[in-house]
Image 1 (cartoon, rainbow, N blue to C red):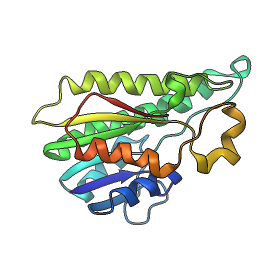
Image 2 (image 1 turned 135 degrees about the vertical axis):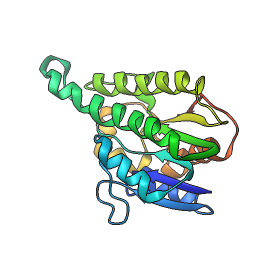
Image 3 (image 1 turned 30 degrees about the vertical axis):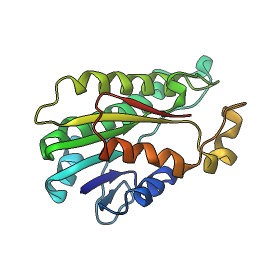
Length: 198
């Protein structure tokens, strides 16, 4: 398969690339030299898709969120997650569907806070839950045998030093274990699912 992996340079992205290494992986991201993309911009995503040509799968492990106390949060802070992780991934799906071969798939990334809120994580909870709702709705309408799923990992073991204080009592998961759910989405048959890796 020819797979576009957006966010391929991050901890999770690298694990996904390793798990799917038996396929052709086109790793894209803001810092990618070969496949640069800004998922907050239509023109940037369209330019990327023109460069890649037709694809068997699109996988997104990208998207910024805002973490901070609700009492101090401004609408502009909340918009960070809306414009980047939510609309960025939705943009990849909406534009990318037209660049997939029949039977192709789209896999987006949410996270455990969609169901298990944390302190300072209202933006993350809202965005992740919205992505899951989009996936469920989009799966009902995709033509040509196209599929769409989301993967919802817990906090990654590799990220505990940076984010562990936000997740007291949560069981972290290794990035390699989370990556298996992306393989399940890409190589499997299900659609409209959120694969939880908790």
